[in-house]
Length: 222
Image 1 (cartoon, helix red, strand yellow):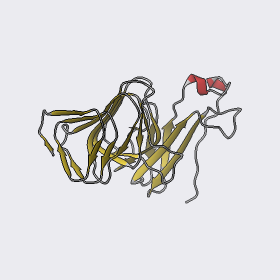
Image 2 (spheres, helix red, strand yellow):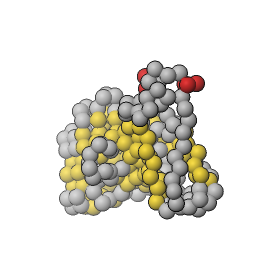
Image 3 (spheres, helix red, strand yellow):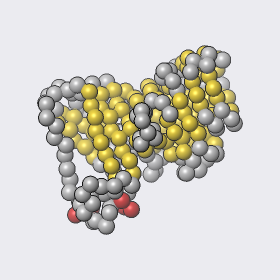
Image 4 (spheres, one colour):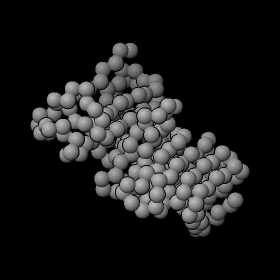
């Protein structure tokens, strides 16, 4: 199935690709999207948009997605990654929820090169794991939402960095923490430091004021 540049195809049900799908236009899917074949797209074209009403699953298989847009009809409509999704050119979360279903094993993630732009509507965020590849020191990169920022400095930078963020999580020391869970994982790298900005919403202050919160950092043995 070949979609030329400028073409738009809207599917109100599920899309299941087991052969070859070449998308140089825009493919809008209201139901589930499952790819077990080959999906290709080019540059700023090739948009896969999860749109419309209702919850949906997204399983891209082994094919990368050039541009992924989550634009559901309602703020409560959930798109769940059932396998890791690599998005190379651009990710946009306009409406709805995108989750990597972080409590389920095996874990999956939204994966993008460090320089790939992420665009969020106000108040929107990815629940679960976001991995940035091709990492380099010295530049703040967005992960789950605009205020989830990580910069590494000095030493040798890791090759990739993953942030898992779960809103309304149970804090381990409730008296001084917010109700939001963060975990970090990286591959490679030695002797580097990290500057991290942590986001949360007012309802997650856990009866604290912002001034009463305790900043923290993670130290690992090498």
